[in-house]
Amino acid sequence: MPEGDNRERDCCDACGAVHYVNPRPVIGTIPVWGEEILLCRRAIEPRHGFWTLPAGFMEVGETTAEGAVRETLEEAGARVELGPLFSMIDVPAVEQVHLFYRARLLDLTFAAGTESLEVRLFRASEIPWDDLAFRTVSATLRLFLDDRARGSFGVHTLEIVHGRPPAPAAA
Image (tube, rainbow, N blue to C red):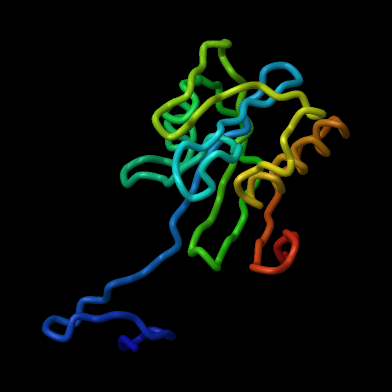
């Protein structure tokens, strides 16, 4: 445990430098066109062949908003107008925090990127719930559809702990 810290960390024996292991931000969008939502079918592991919102790891030197726009372009070939943050989901079991922004497609020009098998628009009734890749995606989509039906969007924080359904984060 480094001096002044409250937990064990990997430290260099020679110089004492602390090697921090921190959560990795995963950022993406909920791209919509009218009443439809754009989803990508994954061409990579984990969850190859399953559907997801366009999202991926944030890169050094970019903001979360820039990363969300970049990931949407890379995975879905889609250009979006970014809206506000919609959900932030803690996933401590995999050392990640997932952030999804609301977004409006600028046009219907989209195509699968190298990490996607296909990309398509879904109406709420068509979403392949049993074939969604991640619990963060299904939780975000359910919250989005609930908010849209209510006519009022909020910002949602959740925790996904292995073996338990998604739960709102403690205030």
